[in-house]
Length: 292
Image (cartoon, rainbow, N blue to C red; front, side, top):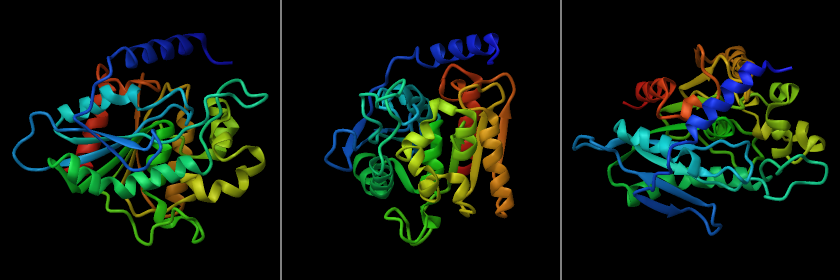
């Protein structure tokens, strides 16, 4: 049973993270015809005359419909105030109606969620060049929180997808690196721990499809990538426990790749995207180390 004090702390952290008003973007561009196939752009605040590194943000929310990109707009604005150009990526998530026997909206759509992330990342250089001239598309860092952390890791690993995957890239993407924030980075461990109510299995189409689709979707199965990767994780996270990130880092090491892991004491799941929290400054520093 989860410690009641931990539950109370998590609720307070979530309330703080979601207390900030949404921040409107400086520009928005579509990468497809569906309403969710859009990217919001934030210009770097107070930056010098030169181009700024571009940070692509993939939001979390267990790949479920009620959680869209709006809740990370304060985080995107925070990064813009650190001098980054920012792209806040939306994508199709699970349908709003729960499936029969489910406690809530189903997580993700197969294959649409992956279709969208692949299409958005492929289109990003061109969209950024047109919508945000301040962005340096030669210096791109992917970041994402929770389910979005999974998508960031997956997006950086498309060149090691199975050869028959429609999302496979012929060569590594042009990225400076990935900073994954409390990512759902190892689906097997996440399912063992019941992370987000079995969201990983739902994303892949249900338990009957889980094992067959893991090689195309699970970051822990897509290693090594050769892309500089860092994970930032709160030690007190009860939403996506540290064991998930630690398992991913161990899998990377077994594959011959070093993934940086920063474990923050006294920090849970939501301070990583809360501009009012010290943990958010740590995230910005991790991004800076890759971007500049």
